[in-house]
Length: 181
Image 1: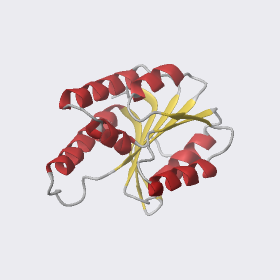
Image 2: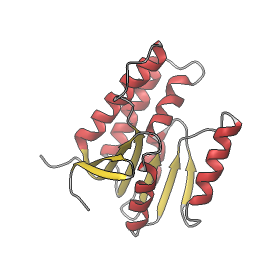
Image 3: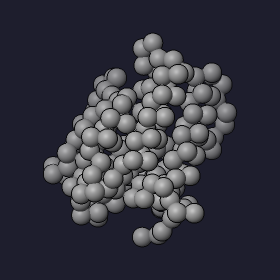
Image 4: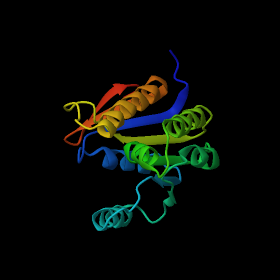
């Protein structure tokens, strides 16, 4: 079956697996202008330091767009045949959506629908980075279980339509779907 999301790649992996490094290398290798879409928010000093460190490691020529919630709007605005969008990270985005003040299940479902629809109509190359969290034990708390469920369903929805899906383990990319490099 021909992929509906030509040029879209999903890079999955655990914490410190090398998934972001791989995504950044793929973006650099694309030869296209890169628009880095950051979903992280600095909720504490440690996260603020991580953000600063990540920013210092990226090429200065990359455009930065910070968007914790409305990824659909970013995709609609910036996806062009001449661009490479690197969105890092979908699980931080999911956390932002689920934990936003006053957020409801319907709010998350709408963000997800809008995001998946924006991907279907996107142009150019899009590299999506996300944490694979479904290989561990079932979490004890309700919010944690919902997070694992929702991230799994989000990854499945993207993977069904993405041109390439890669799982990174110990810095080693394993192509699950689509062409190898």
